[in-house]
Length: 552
Image 1: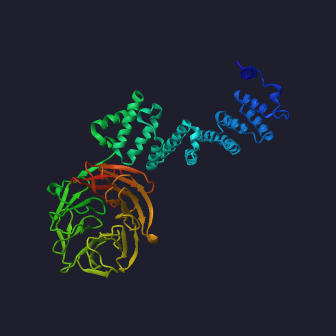
Image 2: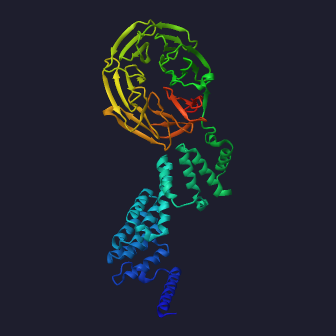
């Protein structure tokens, strides 16, 4: 044994003997004198560690204070005190302050690694991720080796799980992807169980059902007998029933409408009565408008000879009457229960093209393609006024009436990302906006203050104020088709997607909930004015009514 090794061994034995003596007796007289001008930095370090080992964090802190006063640039002071503060006193803020000081004195990436570890122990995952990104930016992380990989994974995993708790599922999935870099499924252990469940939940909440199913199945696979029994039961149900098992007992289908032989055809957008008690469904091949009771799905009146241009019908505010434009240009007002004609009005002249129809109070409003607005009393058929818009209505444009019949929003079929708003009283254009970016303006709130704008994989809420402003955007990472629906108050947004899911978003909180599931891609959705029901048509021709808020 070399003399150097022997000296180190003897010194270690001396320290051990001294520690044992101090553990059995009160602190030595030297240690009791906290600040001693004769102490070296090594003395302070020894006595401070001695106090910490005995669990006397207060005395250790006093000794560190003396050490700092005498030797303020000794990096060992800050490293030692940070360890005591973090591991014994639980003072993470103090530990981080010491490590920042040590990092400034030494510039050592090893100190940066310790600061990252304390930041993670403190639970500040946002700060931890920022530190990880800073270390990666200048490649200093390589000095830390595998230890950095572990800390990096913990940082992204921790932030992702917090994002799941905050219902920020897309952001959580992005962090989980970074946490899982270089990690195979066989590397997972039971300790990773909470993380895998959070990943599966994030996939589920974003409608990525197959990925969610794989996540839950993987969890049960590596957890074995330690798996949560509820998740085990869910995986068994997924194996038996597919992804529909996710929504067992959570969705309420009010009714499936009997569309009969017309299933193979195309229909215009269906429409709810203002009180949500009736829904109309137009079959353009048969030129027939069929009404259904939403409470049961039972058919009501069937109205033939409806216009070959879809969508020109409107319910009265109380849902007891419906105005329909026939293929001959005549407008009839009918009873919704039996379809009996109550009033027949020859409103359109030869060659005139209807552009929109609405019921407001006791007046019927007819919008002609030329831009003329005609109003008639729904009881007598007498004219009660007219006006002309600044611009004509292009063919096949989407026309959205405000609930009070005072204004409209017009969306051209050839420029579906641009809208113009008009006053029906003066005829003047009152606003416009252009969403851009290959987006489609799909629906409006009842007061036309908000519009639902659909992009291939996201939905945004816009307001036409100030030339058009995007208020909120929801990303989904999959094809949402071309359709979304807003309730009259602009509080609930409903949409369907390529997986057959019907999802409702509470716009105040941003929370999402799957309210329905079809076997095929969703082609069209509509929402009742009060936000209680959603209707969905899938590519197989199935129409179902779903409760948005259960029990309504």
